[in-house]
Amino acid sequence: MVETLSKYIGQIRKRWGLRAPRQLYRMLKLHQTAFDTILENMFATLEEVSGLFTFPIVASIAKMKPELVRLIESEGHEVASHGYNHVRYPTISAHARRQDLLRSLQVFKKIGIEISGFRAPYDNYTDDMPELLEQTNLIWDGGFGYRPEHRERTHFFHVEIDGQESNVSYIPLNMWSDDYMIDRKGMEPKIISRVLKREMTKIAPTEGVIMFDLHPIRMGQKKYVGCFKEVIEHANSIGGWCTTPTEAVKYWNTHSKWKGDSKFCLLLTGDIDNWVFSDYLRRVLWRRRG
Ligand SMILES: [Zn+2]
View 1 (cartoon, protein in one colour):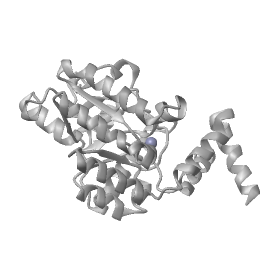
View 2 (cartoon, helix red, strand yellow; view 1 turned 90 degrees about the horizontal axis):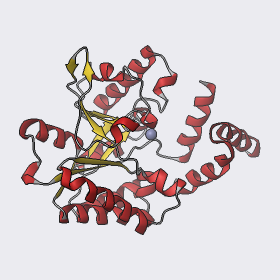
View 3 (cartoon, helix red, strand yellow; view 1 turned 60 degrees about the horizontal axis):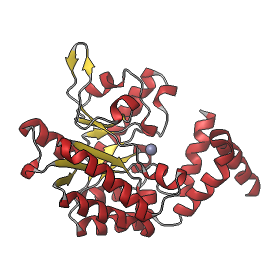
View 4 (spheres, helix red, strand yellow; view 1 turned 120 degrees about the vertical axis):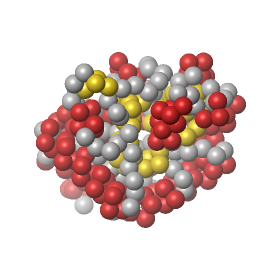
């Protein structure tokens, strides 16, 4: 056991350098809360303020607990694809990227979930990925917009493909993610709420859209889950519409404004990369071998 663990730590150290043991310990601690509980915490909080949330899920993980994926959808929230394996797309071939994306969509179809949106693992895209996305039925992408040149945008945007505008709507992704705020900056819940509210207040006058990536593994913990309530209450108080990307994109494409004449649109999203700690370890090992 000790030998196995030290091997794991060695692998992870290669990836994160000196931060490795700390990151490993952090994930171990977070995964002590069962994912069922994490989701229950989130559903209860979101329901209090009628907020919707979108969960891009790694398909190879999704198929291990299809009942949780269906539960998310039956609670009225959205499920999106986060790829089949959690790999950095630029490190694999164009063929492998295509396979990974299509395989993920097949998995969700088999589970009985309709998928309209996608976010690549690590928000890491190659320049030609919009062409690939265009060949699917997806209507939105929530990761390409994390590129520095798109991050500061305030509206959905389209990418030019062979001189034509993409059908897929691209959504700018705000830089204030939970891993940045909690793991990197050590922020407490009060400060996290303050930052997210500040970012929304900035976007409101543009009548645009703001999307956050707030991973359930951190934000669904009892300590942080209350942030969702504060953020959605603030959004409501300044005329925001907190919905899912599919609903927002469809509405915008038809009406060129937000539902109920809302001033702006708030999209709360958070990727699910693993259900349990061993999923996390397996992935890290797999990556180094692959
Ligand atoms: Zn991820």
